[in-house]
Length: 210
Length: 79
Ligand SMILES: [Zn+2]
Image 1 (tube, rainbow over the protein chains, first blue to last red):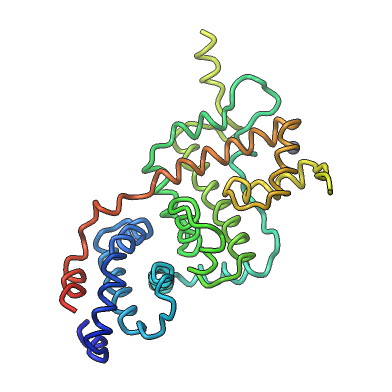
Image 2 (image 1 turned 180 degrees about the vertical axis):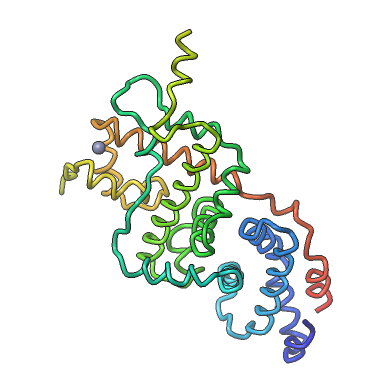
């Protein structure tokens, strides 16, 4: 890792250090949210820092250093782990305006019955790790955008800048990613017996009535 | 002054994601909120999406807890 940095003057190296070091914790956190494995995260962060050192002279606005580093990290993550299947899905994603959406709410809510909100009851059954597992099943692009928006809380504009895509694409990818995520969550809920294929089981209501 | 347009469930559905993400325009928020006052189904949908989003927000890890990249950290410190 020494090599790319020898091209910088001592002053530039100081700047490099002062820019990246305070943000290393952010890179590790987002890296771990994306990879879930400390070992893979460490690799990803090392590659990100190496790339950042190499391209440091291209960073003009130092107030945007965090977004710039996150862009390198997410690009690195996506290109490293992306599969062939993912590539095909991207073309489909950009091509179709409104792909078929899966909605957990539509599957679980029962507008006919006025008592309770079965869809909300199901959500309370999930533990944090169930959500992490479901996010981990998404392809790299979808995982990245869900983590950036829902977990990290970045705005659409910030995500557009980090992922280097138009805001409209942020919206459409987010919508597709959530649809995929909700489908995974639904499958998990079925596996766990929290819902039947025909909708939410009436067990909770029945228990309450006893 | 333009009063907010009445929207139906189909239009409301399109506004919900940005609303839950707190990324919608003021006028979209107002139109949607007006619809939610009279539509329990869309109201429940918004509540559900908010609840789900809130759970995902809770997955954010603690930055200080990760002390992994010791080599990278040392490399940067020695620059
Ligand atoms: Zn409605």
